[in-house]
Amino acid sequence: MAERVRTAGACCTLIRGALTTTLPDGSQVAEFMLHIYADGTADWRRHDEPFDEVNS
Image 1 (cartoon, rainbow, N blue to C red):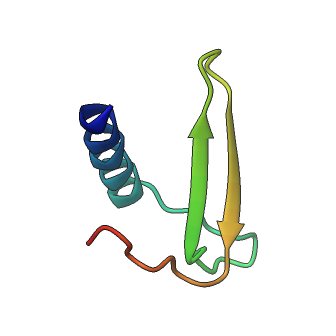
Image 2: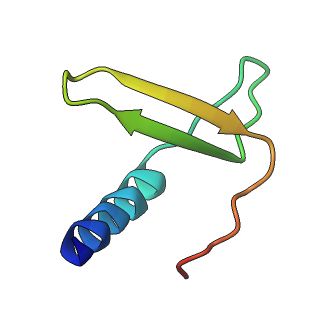
């Protein structure tokens, strides 16, 4: 289980470093959460404030 958590954390770091989200007015979203489901669909939520780095 611990290895899966480390792998998931590494994946999140790579995704967050590679993706940005921009609002229609051109401003960048501070943070977002992306969930990719096993069926290949995805869901996301945006946040106006950056997340605290819990695992940094």
